[in-house]
Length: 199
Image (tube, rainbow, N blue to C red; front, top):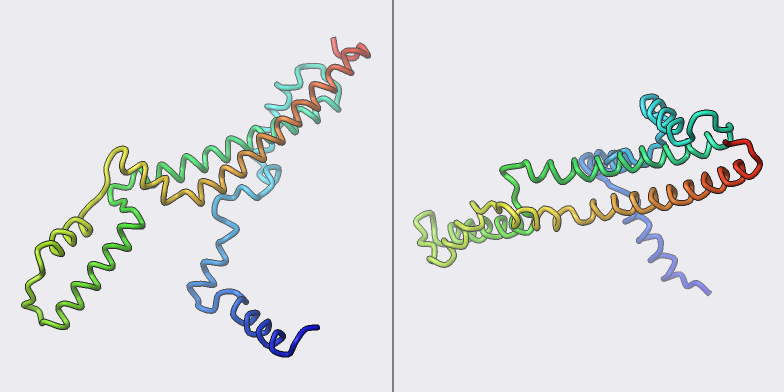
């Protein structure tokens, strides 16, 4: 039996989880599904459809029966999809690597902590405050440090791990679809060869 207290708690939780309230939150939520466009069906893009058809005809070979061409089309669509996923991964990483002002998220948090701490010291002791040497060195390091080379790449991959993980899931699904599509095409070709319809 559900108690009145539980019902009230559920109602309170429901009110708290009905989505963003501010304009900024609403505009961000609007763009959630449009991050990389990989959830959009590939056939909805006319340019991609032409690419798929061209690749499917190459895979199926000349003179293939219509059902074999259709199976080749499914392989081609997945292959083009894989190219889109890999392009999205490349764009995500290269945008951060090419950014000369890149700073890891963890260091931005530390920098905001340092600024808050220095502001607090100035409020308490006035503008002529003498900042302790260790804090001054730490502040200098945190506020002006920018990673380079391999260290920068490590921080980029760490910061982008959730987005790269999502793209990796898209890629794994596409690879699985391609594997099954290739098996279906091989099976159809074997049957067609046995029946003599493919030379």
